[in-house]
Length: 411
Ligand SMILES: O=c1ccn([C@@H]2O[C@H](COP(=O)(O)OP(=O)(O)O[C@H]3OC[C@@H](O)[C@H](O)[C@H]3O)[C@@H](O)[C@H]2O)c(=O)[nH]1
Image (tube, rainbow, N blue to C red; front, side):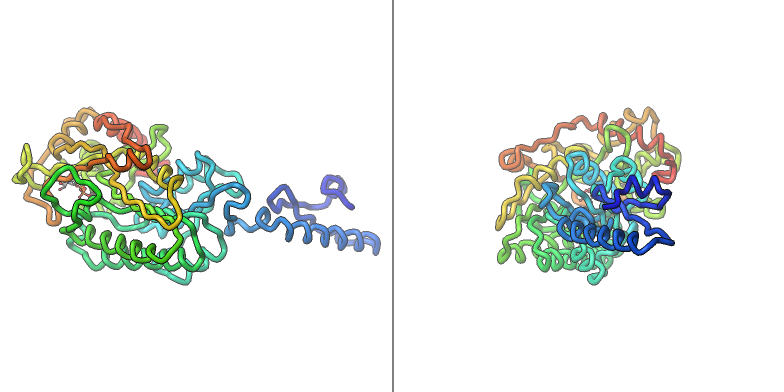
């Protein structure tokens, strides 16, 4: 049989096919013998490829874990939390497919990941909207996912009160599309990004997983609806489900590769961390603290700030420990509440900037105080937050912010 090296030495073109195989361009003017050899070689190549189909699939069709590598679909993987999760999964040798419509996420984050993991079969990015059920089904048909981590969602409490239909549609309808695809294609595991906002404003702190969920804003209500859809579906399914209720996520990759880069046009709805950094950089004149008359120690809202590195660690643990026909619901927080005023002081120290602060009336949709009891996740998944120093988490995030004044557009 004609070897590829000999073909090359004869000046003939070859190109990689993946899996260590190459496509051999036929000689233009060959004799009959040459043609026979070529046909035999290509037939042998085809048989070999069919037998080892998973190694030769195109870049838009990754395989399931038959080759020992678990394939995880990360929806919203171009976003802040999704990109950090994808990085962690890739570091842990998972195969990752990111699906994102880039409405809130950044292509720059995907490019960073592609630069870090360029090897074939590690990471693919598919630009698609989860609202497009046909496109989603095609993605599931062309790939074989072992697990889905469903991060993609709009996620600003303030915005949800101003544009509730966007939230109800994006969060519930898109989750339904994902669930239908998961069911049709028999994906074994689902890890869902839920939120402390589903609890609303409970009477008793800290919040445990059985604390009644009485959300008070459209964001929390839509997330609760999505949880309910997943729970109802899971009752007659073999799927392993983990629902993670995040508290307030901060920080960024300690190695400075990824960060939080919200869209500038959404700044008015932005989270406290983004607003603090924008104020420290001088992009906005100062930080607006929204509400000082809450029944809390200093009158500002209390939140439980969880570092994104810890959060993605919880996802990997959830993925590893998810069991068929089982649902795990976990709070992901530090167990410690900090007021907005405390947050601002920590941010001033972390950035070294004496941020100007203005005090404004309450923001609609806000609840006074939430912090988690993280005992259940420690007991079941052996997870606890390690980065619990608020200032240190903000210092790490600030480093990325300073080197990326225009977000990923700076890279
Ligand atoms: O500019 C700002 C932004 C926020 N805040 C205050 O800071 C506190 C935290 O607000 P954020 O918008 O950062 O976060 P929220 O608590 O509203 O929700 C956040 O945590 C739960 C997640 O699931 C949500 O996706 C996330 O947005 C609130 O009291 C808010 O009013 C300000 O005072 N000024």
